[in-house]
Every structure is written in C-alpha cells, then in structure tokens.
Length: 147
Image 1 (cartoon, rainbow, N blue to C red):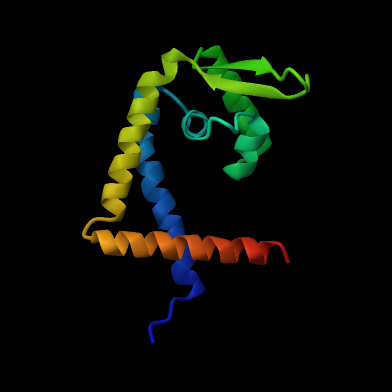
Image 2 (image 1 turned 45 degrees about the vertical axis):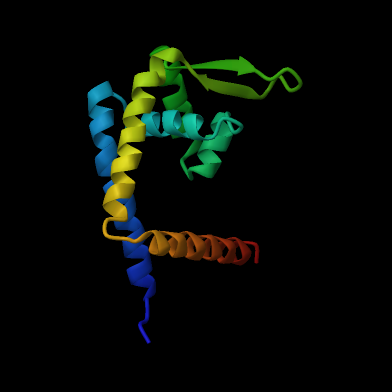
C-alpha cells in the first residue's frame, strides 16, 4: 500500500501555495500591489456575500492587522470602497470599484493558469475523483478541528 506521510502532505500543500503565489506575483508587480492587496481583491470578487475585513482575515487565515492595512491602501488607491452596515453601524462592508476590474481579469487569468499547471495530464474522471477526495478530506479536517 502506498503511504502518504504527514511531511509529504504538508510539503505538497506548501508547494502548491508557493506555485500560486509565484503566479500571482506577476499581477502584484504589474499593478504595484502587495500580495495581501491582491488577496483582498480576489477574495471580494470570489466571495461577494463575505465582504468585511474580519471575514477576509478569518477565511484566508491572514493577520487582521495585515488585512486592515491592505484595505486602507486599496481604499486610498480607489480599488475598493466601504459602506456602513444599515443594521449594525460597527460592521463595515467592502466592495470592489470599477477601477479594480482589470486586476480582477488578471487574477482570473492567474487562477486559470494555476489550475492548468496543477492538473496537467489529469483526465476528467481523475478531476472528478480529486474533487470528491478533496471534499471528503475537508470534511474530515472540519470534524477534527471541532474536537
């Protein structure tokens, strides 16, 4: 039986993130943005219902201070806007501006290139299996983290 060690799994995960970050760096350089700023833009584009700095920090496992600085910088650059929640004035919602559209398109190209690289040589059946296995692994991780 083939055995996957903890080191193998963690190293694969770390190198996958490194590959994605290296592809994203081109967009960072092109638009003079930090990795955190690109992450915020990407997150807001992909998660329109989760639009607060706290949600970005929590769901992307980023330090709140880094997200706050990134948000302020993006507001200064007119790439995102903020508005106060109508029912809870302490809650601030973030939204992408039209000025962010070219960056969003670039990030989408990065995402496509990333998945093409990651799944090169995989059949449609293997992609489906991978998606099923990943879902099951995530369920196991969530169960384990609740203990």
